[in-house]
Length: 335
Image (cartoon, rainbow, N blue to C red; front, side):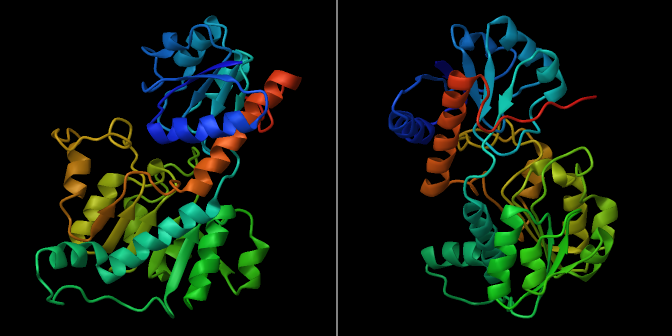
């Protein structure tokens, strides 16, 4: 099968080529640097499938153009699929497949990296030492042991985060429509979101972006938090209202903010903009706070995770070509 692979970087090509070769019956992968959009959809002409990433646009108009081009399958190199209009895909009889899980450890460990870096001011200490400044003023941290950590979303990633934090001696509070037995077994307590917000010293988000979770952390949620709380988001940018975060930082309610995702990251993340002026004023304001640490959606970026993503992507393509159904096809959504 010829596959138009959008939003590719050198590392995508490297891992997908290895995974494709290992499949035995390799597909014809056409690597494209362009993001998938209405304007770039014609680049998929002649392909049987498209392979898209988290910031590619797969709304109704794009899907209609892909269908006209004869595309038979959309394969996502991600677990999340909030960038896909599933109702439109279903109406067009265009199946969509994803990578259901690749390395929860990768994102969970990045979450801890953000927590520890913010707590112990590692990013500030690194810059100081490079300049010959070995003063400890302003670098005071706190022990994680004994702290209450609220985990919003306790699926595979949230469970690994809980396991690691349990090892630090943290008290785990959890919020999820479905309780995870592993978290209960380690002594974690499930509470409603408002109770978690009010009691937690650290809050970390691991929920999918759905209509009911969009801006789940807004100004109302911030008002319920402990003063000086640490907030971490490595899930999807849209689960928090960025302006509410800025307001919370200005008042001191949010004492630390660690982000690996941003609700308007399309056009920012995964690109080298070091020679450009950032045009997003809200994002630029966020970067001015000394207690904010932002990474560019790199939580998934480990060799193990990229290997697993490539393998699942090729598996989806091969399964669809052989049986007409992708291995990890997303169930149709009915209106």
